Image (cartoon, rainbow over all chains, first blue to last red; front, side):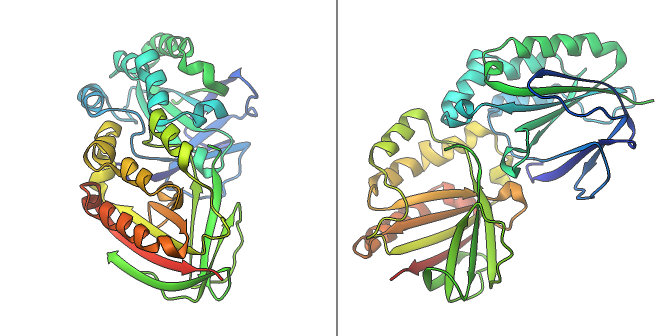
Length: 182
Length: 182
């Protein structure tokens, strides 16, 4: 589970996901595209309007008790009813990365309740975090969410709460790609 | 400082560092070679017996107070008198990476005193940590140490103390490359 898995996300003419909107809450957006595909372990040079790559990795902030709480309720990607998705690429400031581990953890959870807030939206919203800062990519993380159409308003509420946190003051670029599959 | 910097280490016929010995305390060793070069930001396809690459990155375990203590005494690489070096590539087990953040931190510092032990050997031993697990490399970290010839016995003592820790029980491969420059 903690073995790094390369993930490539390509937006273009192909893919099971239809892009329904791209907005940029902070900083520059990404180019418009019709469809999107997420490929695990792939290193394909597939044509596309843009391509983001990263790796799934070990936990960076989550404590054992939090992981156990999450594991008790979360569900995996690819559920039949989860026909809506969101891709949120994020970059954080140099000030964020210059902080030591305990200072970043304090902001993420003790101040911002990021993990606790996310827990409230399980199992409706399934989630996968992809790291890309260390790969020299334009974003630090790509977060992928999947949910049913009837849970879209709840997902919007989750995003709104996270964006109001102290942690989000360190976000220097954020793009929101909304998707649907048939 | 926390901006990821790619680093490439190539062992072969060239480089300012002469390899004086390669041993493998745990697992498979690396091929013998005469010399070694460390290149920052380089993506060269330089010929060599072996090549390891990684990135310097943000702090993963160190707390602010610990960083301040280290920063007060540590010295940089490249000191004129630091004509001895060691490269220690390490891989840890899946059990290690499967642990949540607080469990790994507890083993590294509360149980093993890794940061505190390292502090005792400053400023004699200068150090740089290079991460490579997320790049799909054979090792998880490369640690580079530089010191004066008269501090070599102290460096050996540091290695011995770290290898006796609980943290080291999770090391599944460790190579020790010793080096000198004229």
